Length: 126
Image (cartoon, rainbow, N blue to C red; front, side, top):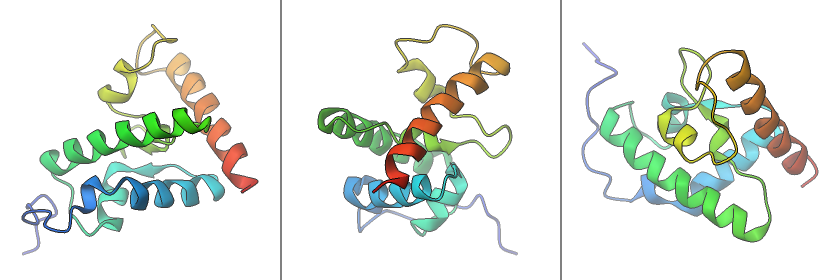
């Protein structure tokens, strides 16, 4: 029986830390005007969803957004969301310095939609 929550072993190729590769995946998603779930992104990288893999991915998403900010580009981590409610996880919200409301609900969805649309608009022209 195939269990989707089993670990895939170590990340010997460092795919989870591949800032350039994951950036390219997210830029393509932005061009297509779509968000990706954590599971979808992990599967694209060749992994099943596990919490340790997701945490490693989140560290890379932070690095991607830091690099994008330095280049004057919009953040891309806002495109990675939970399957259950299509909102980013806690790590994304705690890094917001211009948002202090609940991380769920209508205000959170509006705030996220603004960030996602900025990424869609920017990358659809590239």
